[in-house]
Length: 246
Image 1 (cartoon, one colour):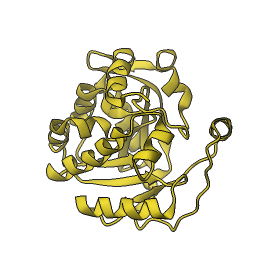
Image 2: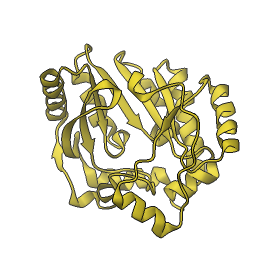
Image 3: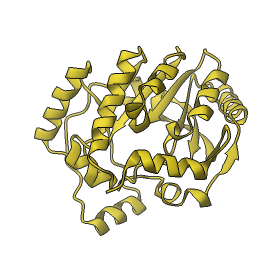
């Protein structure tokens, strides 16, 4: 088991250079009703269901360094061309490059909603990060929980179980600083009992429910799950927070 905070630091040394960050593509996506997307390189978790695993596992081999100005201008141009009102950084973990991310946010016009998709680890271990994010009124943060409890988190990510607590603390920090945020959770590997207990923990933070994150069985993902002997496909009732309506 590895320390996700330490992995974030070592990964940053590979994918960041000053205020520049490595990206492997810019693309329009159908989620949230249509969104301009920049896919970054580098993560601090190693999720068995990750759809961009090759970039996570080999960050030095993929992408190119982009300045905040280049990222923001590409996203805004794409949004205008496609008629989107929403923008995001996705792919791997956006929060690893803090200075870069904050500068991109400064450059995005307030008329666009910026959706930050994150595992929350770094926001959980550094409350000032949530304070910095609170400066952007057009920001929405989606914290993707990896499993419904500490045991599932370690099984699915390879990281120490304490990382799950950091994910929950990220939600607390964001709420305390007035940042609009919501939890999502990969529940394809979770029991109904574990999900029920997670809902109780989230209510203690101030969230009545969470968005269900769906497992997409790309061939490489399915092969990796079978190789690791990890069962999946548990069916649960839909979340009351459909992703397209966030």
